[in-house]
Length: 223
Image (tube, rainbow, N blue to C red; front, top):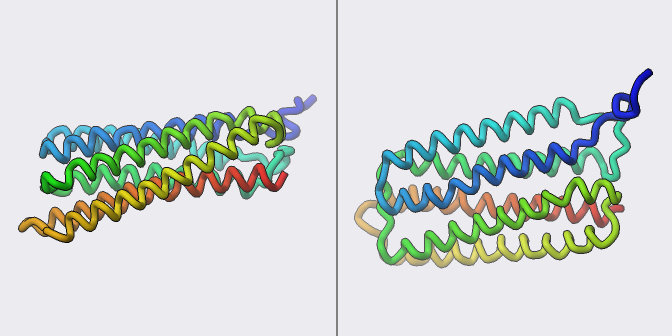
């Protein structure tokens, strides 16, 4: 006789939380990579890029498993499309973190001294946004058990707004940094180009974190 789990499928939300943790492990490597860029430590950068590649691969394995086993008959409290959209946006965060690591290894990047503090502040804001997003994701299983309603849902809604605010802060910091390195660019123009690519990857991480939050908000609001 089939068990209920076999009949209706296994809930994917615990696995989504695991995927979110894997993705955050990728973003957590962004700060030591940024510090190695400023220190011009190419050996360390190559080591960290390998760690990033491994972490992103592990996240991909979890993502693929979720997609392959996402049930069509499970009585989800939200639309199945919302689950796949959430997963896709989380996956893009990992991709952008890996892009950041790869660009950092192209060549030695010279960041002007007057830009280094602003660059690290941008990194910190992006990592903080990822921290906040992981905190949100940790609530997924509980939200599913409560059918995305109740006090926990209200608390998550407030935290989503915090993630959105952090994304805005990241954009502001990115523009501040760009004005500084474009107003008096160093002789090494290739470093400017690569710095711009690094900043785009950082902002993309924050953008997708905001999108994940907004997707979660839609799950709650459509209940």
